[in-house]
Structure formats: C-alpha cells, structure tokens
Image (cartoon, rainbow, N blue to C red; front, side, top):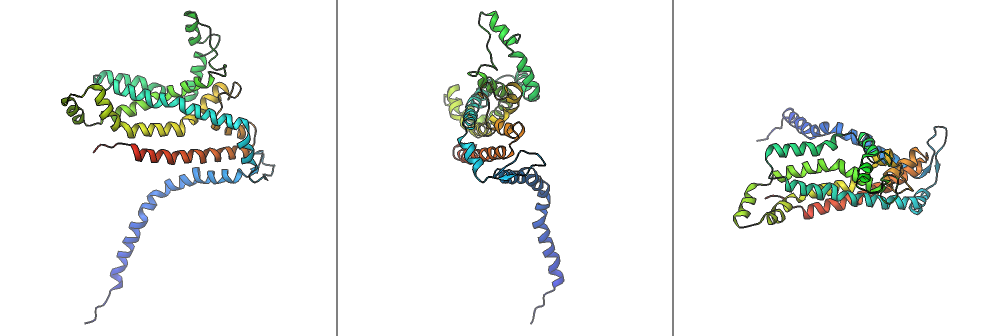
Length: 309
C-alpha cells in the first residue's frame, strides 16, 4: 500500500519551527543594534582613524600615516608615564575597593538589623553623589589656604599639605577620592554576598570548635571569592577610568603630569591637542591591553572562585 504525504500538514510545522528559531533573535535585536551602533562600530572607526593624522576640522583631509601613530606613541615619554600612572591608580584602588570593604563586611555582619541598615545607608552616600559634585567638595576640603583638612593639620601643629599641587602625593590624593566613592558600593555587594552564605556551614564549624578567625578564613572568604574576584576585575579594568572626572576637574593631569593616565591622555589628545589619530591610537592600545587583562581575569575567576555546593 502506497503512503501519501500531505504537504499542507507539513507547512504549519515548518513555519512554527522557523518562528521558534527566529523569535529569540527578534528579542535580542534591539540590544544587538545598540551594541553595534555604540560599541563595535565606534571601535572599528577608531581602529581606522588610528592610521591617519587628522586635526578634527571638517575642512581638513585625514592623512594616512600607517603605523607611525603607534610607533610614536609607544616611544613617547608621556605615554609611558601615563601607563605607569594607570598601574599606580589600579594598585592604589585595590585596597579601597576590595580589601577594606571585605573587612567591613566581615566585621559588621553580626550587627543588629537597625544598626546594620544605618551603617549601610551612611557608607553608600558617597556613591550616589555625582562625581563632579564630589570633585568640587574635595577641592574645597583640600584647599591649601582655607581647606578644612589643612585647617585641622594646622591646629595640631603640622604644616599645610599641597594635596593637589605636590607631585609626590597628588596621584594618591586622587586615588583616595576615587576609592572613597567606591567603598560603599563594594561594601554593600560583599555584605549581600556574606549574608547569603548558608548559616549551617558556620554553625557546623562552631560546633566543631572553630574560632571566629577560622570561620572567616575557611568558610566566609572562600565562599566570598566570586564576589571578591569580580570586584578585583572591575577595579583593574575600570578603576583608572573612574578617576578621569577627578583628574579633569582637580589637577588637569598635573602637577608635572603626575596624575595623568591613559584615559585622560587619550581625551587630551582628542579634545585639547585635536590630534584625532593619536587619540584613536591611544584608545586602541588601551583596548588591546585591557582586553588581554580581561581574558586573564576571567580565567582566574573560573580557576579560583569557590561556589557553594
């Protein structure tokens, strides 16, 4: 007996399968379009522009220079200085955005709910202050002549300090201001992660005679490692970038280029020197360098993070 196949019954099935395949892409289309328009296309444009010299004037024609921009920037002393300062920003921010918040989250875990909520509210206040407002506030506090900090130093018999004018301490002043903004966010993130740890682990350890330090070392810190590593990665990748507003508003990269970093330098090339080619080249070099670091950080997170269960 010959079986017949009704094509009219197969068509709805094919249409449904096609709709199932296409439906997720329809939902993803706005996000993908945003990524292409605001991230990937500008990145391609920056890569293209890095091979040209152009002063950003509409009447000027970009001049192709090949790899000269890369060769010049890599040998430029101010670029090496900015790269080294970027490393210093990151190293200085790690204790403020990771170590100190971890300690605060541990020490305040056993506070009663009202006091714990109060301190979390107070410590988060710097985070909600606009960066430029925070910069103006710190400019007033650290003023050489009538700043509150120097007034306190004078009352205890110490000489005024040029926090923003002394090349030896200006960078660390900006590190503190940037870290001051981040402490609240990092503390709340670690406090939430600490509070989500299963109390059964802690109770079992205490029944076995574990001390408070042993509970922290052997239970809390390992289970907090995903959050700690995430904050570490965020600080490494974005810490120096977060300081841009304070560099621009408080020091302008000075004194003597002691506070500039690669993010401020690429802005300076583009919007102060009007060298779009150099600015794009600095951006591509920064993207490539931090891209490699991001891959390494993600590998370290997968390798060393301890997950419950």
